[in-house]
Image 1: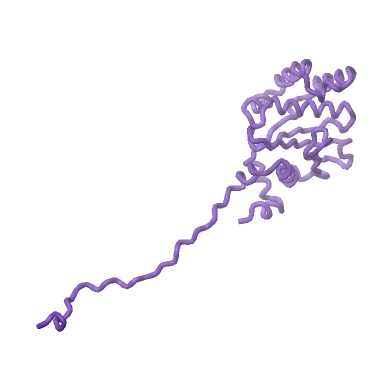
Image 2: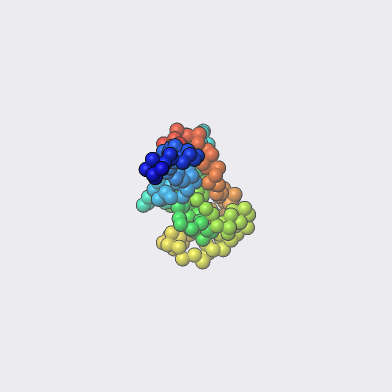
Length: 211
């Protein structure tokens, strides 16, 4: 029998070829915290303005005032219709690449005291530093308000900060007296995780962090 007429050998059948779709590739979605960390200073202030009413719903009004000539106010939360002439809270926004430290915070506190002495506003009830991260020396300082008041006054006496040096001698004395009379427990920080949990209760959450 020739090769051409020989019967084909029997063997296991090859499995049918099955074409599969490529696996779905979903784009990477950064966490809300990472999104906030990426905000520029202006957008960070806007985020804080959205969050503040969730922290304290009884505020009469919340305004963003950051910018040139803000006298150290980024987001002001008014406890009465008197605005800055009545009781209010200051939310100081600091969006830096590095953690907010005591030196920078002390400069903002000096600016606040100078603003009160110059008549731009009354002393706030609360002064909250808002930043993605805080240095250990700032956390330690704010955890010991009486010691920090003493430290602040010692630094104030020798500071070269123009916010203070451009004041008159009488105004400088009033800044010192105001600091001496201030309970430094009014100064605090806010945890970013807590902010995000509270921001979830606002209508802005879905717009900023869509699922």
